[in-house]
Amino acid sequence: MSARTLRITLLVLTVIGVGLATYLTVIHYAGIKPLCGRSGGTCEKVQTSQYSKLVGVPVALIGLLGYIGILGTLLVPEDERSRFATAALTLGGFGFSAYLTYREVFSLKEICEYCVSSAILLTILMCLSLWRFLRGGDIPAVPSAGAGEDGLTPDGQASAGGQSAPLGTAS
Amino acid sequence: MTPVEEDEQDLTRKQRREAARSERKAAEESAAAGAARRRRMTQLGGAVAVVIVAIIVILIASGGGSNGTKVVKAGSHEATEKAKVVEATLNGINQSGNVLGNPTAPVTLQYFGDLECPICREFTLGALPKIIQKWVRAGKLKVEYRSLETATREPETFRTQQTAALAAGKQNKMWYFVELFYHEQGEEDSGYVTESYIQGLAKQVPGLNLTKWQEDRSDPALASQLQSDTQEANNRGFNGTPSFLIGKTGGAMKKLEYSSLSEPTSFDEAIEKLLG
Image 1 (cartoon, rainbow over the protein chains, first blue to last red):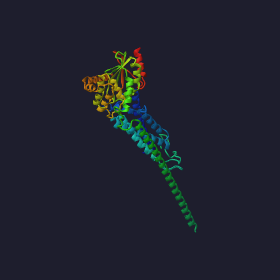
Image 2: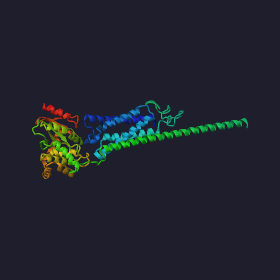
Image 3: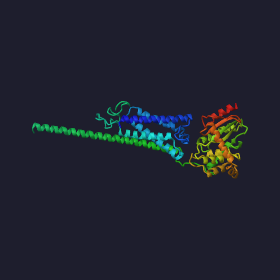
Image 4: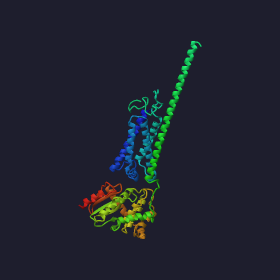
């Protein structure tokens, strides 16, 4: 998978996550019942449980801020630091999702479809962004002088042969 | 050495130098790549460690494991302390069935709650004591406790706990039971509401005749009252607790929208408006 394809995939998944978290944040503040796939309103019970807030902040809002952060790291020109930021944020998001899933299954014994969808999204995002970070930039066909095989100069900055080109340009 | 041999030797030396340079360059690139990989692994390791620590902190802060109930045992020092707080809140206020306050108070507040609901606890320990102090003690407001199942997952458990409270109401001590339940509430849906838990609460209600209370728990009128409360909540479109209706006593009741459950501002404004 090319760096560009990988980045676009990550962007699409993150935008879906932003949409999901925005919906949950809006219904939380508007006091609207969430639309559940099943009858019985189990997602409403999860959304209104004591675990729906963390130190007074709705977890939906924390999720939204997390997704916006991930989106930010994907929109800035790509380099070693932005790849690390994406990986670190998705790792944090995955950990937080794991905690919320634990609460759903073991504390509330209810499943919220939106939370499960977000957990799946974050798992995929984390796997892809870790892979992206560990493999570094695209390996240039002919390494430019002073650049390592990952297209990075010794100080960790992307070289011309790397993929610091903004999204939408061929790398 | 002939000129041809000298040229060949020069060429071989040149090739050797180039080969050595290529090897050196490859070794340097390989070392740089190895260092980059190690650096990335170290950075990721740090990020993983931070995430794990954060999750542990969140788990501890949000109530530990799934069975982390903190049920207060009847007769314990903690139970005595909580009973003192409840006594201080309710002492000297008239109680009649599910009603707290002067029966002829000009304003009525209906509080729809589930005894296992943590947000109801937030209200009962937050805004309610201030409302009681300011309005109920002054004889201007009476509060009716009504039941709506939300946080309690098992309908049978809900029926048992709510009728236990209503049974205390037959001795005009329902509000002691309700307040004690919220003060000693365990972790939501952890199965802490057992018969011994309910019996333990009843023992803490001052002056409750336990034999009569036990008999009254099976009174069919209490089950009917629960159904009536649920019906009213459904008619009003309530799907969460706490929910409130407020109005002039004997008049039409309107849904009360609140901005906070820990501060009584919304309640104060609504009561002041009704009192004119």
